Length: 276
Ligand code: A2P
Image 1 (cartoon, rainbow, N blue to C red):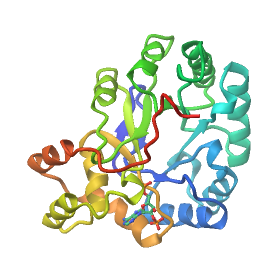
Image 2 (image 1 turned 180 degrees about the vertical axis):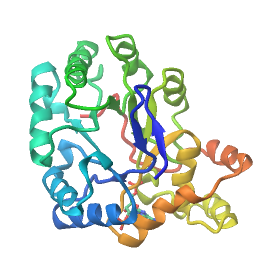
Image 3 (image 1 turned 90 degrees about the vertical axis):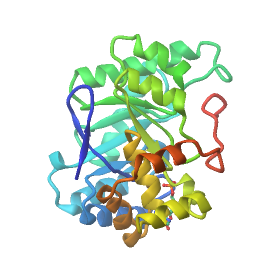
Image 4 (image 1 turned 45 degrees about the vertical axis):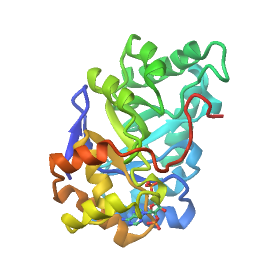
């Protein structure tokens, strides 16, 4: 498995299995199939309510813990210093792990819901810094943070190492991408297939056919070549494997440029500044 290297030197496997909306045996099987296919990076969150079954799959896989890269996230109801520390311990317990590789703030507190949104984010962030300092987690970051949410954290005691955002053709999020690049923050791409909405797009179908690849593989590869780490979700063993094969080809710079300028044509429709 290829990897990206975070600014603290930690290596992070270049494609992860996303697990949002997967639960129970379906989730456990997907994680086991992904590990069999060669994935070593699994992305979850307390809000996904699947940490218990993911922990079971990790143990059943028999893969040594140090070869796996496990991410979880603190949910919006646990913002603030003490509740974030408790939420972290609860996630570890559900996963049956004694450390995490990456822990993220799932959504920014924003001005539409909090007068003191910046200090709420900073107090949550200081808990993540404490977990990092004490070695409970190998890397820390955020998710769904736009440049104005990132600013105070970048200037705090420790700048985030990762920002996980919605990222797929039609949603390049160039401003966020640029701020992350300038500050050596790795962008991770959630919904790299736009929850499946990319798959029938005629432009993407035409470009993918040139490489004899599927549109899913094209979207995943497009993330990688933009320096973003894709987190495709699938419960299907063949598609889990297919998505990993995005490591095995290269999109030309002309085709990258053509995809980069595509207008928005679908996605989650969620705005981090108004997310409840
Ligand atoms: P399935 O689980 O049946 O494979 P995203 O990661 O952008 O949110 O997209 C997830 C959606 O895309 C899921 O509905 C998943 O369905 C589907 N999907 C994942 N990989 C592929 C693929 N290689 N080809 C077609 N659909 C895929």
